Image (cartoon, rainbow, N blue to C red):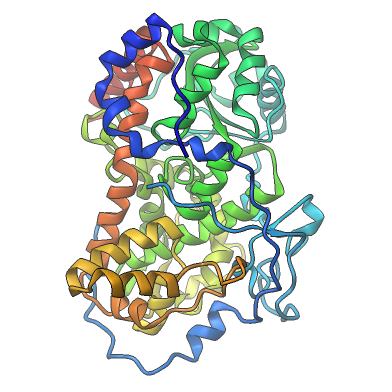
Length: 509
């Protein structure tokens, strides 16, 4: 689909000329396809089976590979949608975690409300509790904006990280509510939000009328230019940092709801999906995003397990998960982030990481706790524990994990092994068609490992290849979002943001 022409304002053209890299080399990352008619595909219910059943009856395969070394951890078409609620693929068995019924990953319906979720408690692991007064203050800030379909607050302004030498003791907020002062006592920080909206240009049109001072010079060119810069380049987000709402200093990013959903399901950038790998406070929800994020969290577990060896601890697993979206991020290479940021996040938020991931981990057939303390009641609340874990490296199990990686990310991994194995282009195209997530009628197929997935899973360099795919996924969108900063925030606020990040990194090094 052709990209809509840019507004021919002189001021905008001069900025474009100064950002040749941004508007030239990244044309392939354009988002114009978001504005086509949304497909609604009907399909029969998926065949009854769970990943566990598939993995526990593996076909003959080669011997397990040697232990992989532990390492630090295109815009494809939208995944097909089914209309209507989930169809149970089989009666829910009497298992510990009934909120994840068998076959829930093999369906992708288009939901109208939360009553159509596969279980009444589905996705409750995503609901992180915080102080009630603080939560009300965050929602009061959100109400100062046009209608939002899905929103969350994140970062160290919401979930304090482990203590470090860079801790700020003064509040940056001009006149915040008492609840925010109390929650951030001893270390006030700007609060970060993500706002997802169904109609990007309409949101910016209303928001420009309410908060023109939030925008850079791009705001004077109108909501069409603002929404185009947001959706067409980078990861599809538009950030306004260092703005004051209700006396509170905030940074908020605006994203199209479809962009968010696609990244959660397919990992085409990991820019938004990666933020949701860590604990966040969801302020307003959408049932389809809850399902997409549950798939995103499960994918983060699988990807991290492919990066790890047979034995590890839960903190190592959570640290690997939290690190995914930072691999390849230019801010890490330029010293714009705290060097121990990832470990600080996990240490301070261990209880919340357990809430997010424990039920997903134990639903996998090839992972288990080897630490006897995991059988003790109340261990989830013991933050001094770092339980030992193990996984089975049999290619039958890991092949299923490869097959169930998000679509865009999985295709990157397939291409790497196509080159390694010397598979011809035509043969590889046939293989991609056979492994597509959609069936001939446009419905969703059950994701079961094929011979190629098991062959990939048996390769000893799989962790390195997965790590390479993570970097390929993260690096370019993150770089472009960084280059968008002077356009969207304005040069002064963009420079302030970079300067404060670098100063914080130097103080903590």
